Image 1: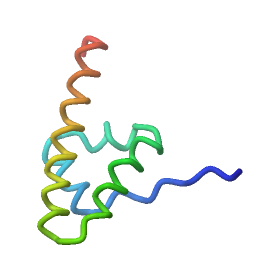
Image 2 (image 1 turned 90 degrees about the vertical axis):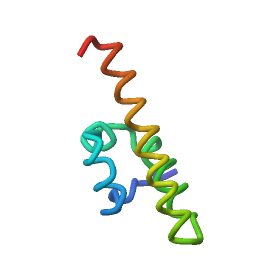
Image 3 (image 1 turned 120 degrees about the horizontal axis):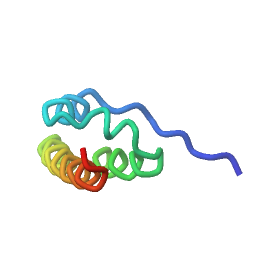
Image 4 (image 1 turned 30 degrees about the vertical axis):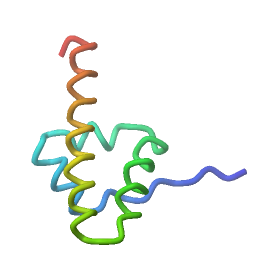
Amino acid sequence: MKAKTCPPTPPDLAAALQARGVLAFFEDCTAAHRREYLDWIAEAKKPATRQARIRSAAGMIARKAAEEAGRSGG
């Protein structure tokens, strides 16, 4: 079975992650982890829903990055 590749981070999500300083963290996550967020965002039917999901995802990713930084001491 061929592994699924992860699509590139959409510009609107990349901008939201960059604004929070976690774009590099997100891009270092596994493809499966990134795909969960990307699929959830892409499934939004309305632009307002997509933007709400991007804001929510950016917040969740920022919290995860902070947790990881706390565990590694940095």
